[in-house]
Length: 311
Image (cartoon, rainbow, N blue to C red; front, side, top):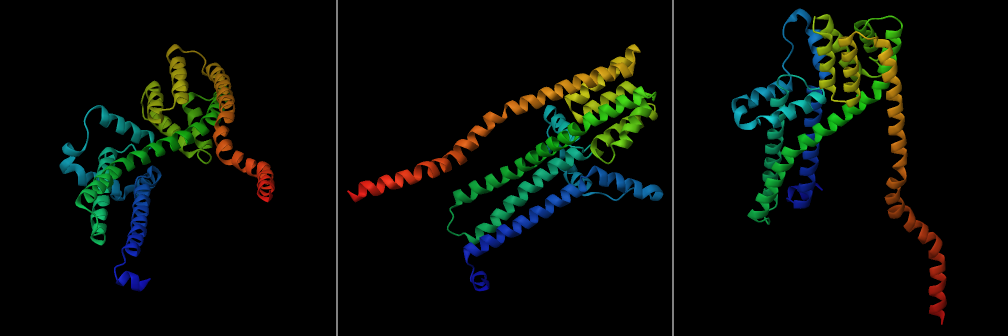
């Protein structure tokens, strides 16, 4: 193996380059995940206390890196608003999140192109056209990969929030019916959900913090719907805003919405169960039926082949 490396064997060099690239991007993804973690930033702010400003994160460094060319790199108008909304759904609400996101896209694309250009020195037989084509493909991959990662991040967080919403709704109904006000009930719900559903608990805690800071309750609740982007939360916020506006009983409204939400959740479960038969059709046809025919028809086919071959 060492002799092949010293002799410049292209296959061995390509394998080593692939392993090095895998380790590099795994480390880069780990740094991105660690740096953009909202919980880590909050812990940094708490631990800093009165000692001054917390340490600068990787995302802030990337935002500073792209700032001189911001007007050339960052999109304008609707595309930027959509990206900011997706980042907000994923839990990244810093002012520099959009700049850091596009800086990461540009950096990843450039790194992939440089890796490919470095690998071409060990592949002298490649034509210039193929080198340029793969370089363009690597650049496109670097620009698309962060978008795919962000979509997966948003779906994962939406799933976590959706899983915790039924428990939050039941706890909120119980707290309001026990005599607590809306702000106190939301605070108690966030405390109870801090272990089992920390993402939703953090969102509800932010709502209560805004209410105690003097923000109008209706605006604070609408901010919850905007940050999460879930239809279930939006429906609950609309219901609570309507009760606050017209002065109706919150407990009665929550009880009606809780029953309606249970019915809709049961309907979604029945819909998912009804789709199982169709989804199982393709695995059955591709995987199970060929094996079944081999076991059932295979011995008979062998016997027939032997019988006709004997004659």
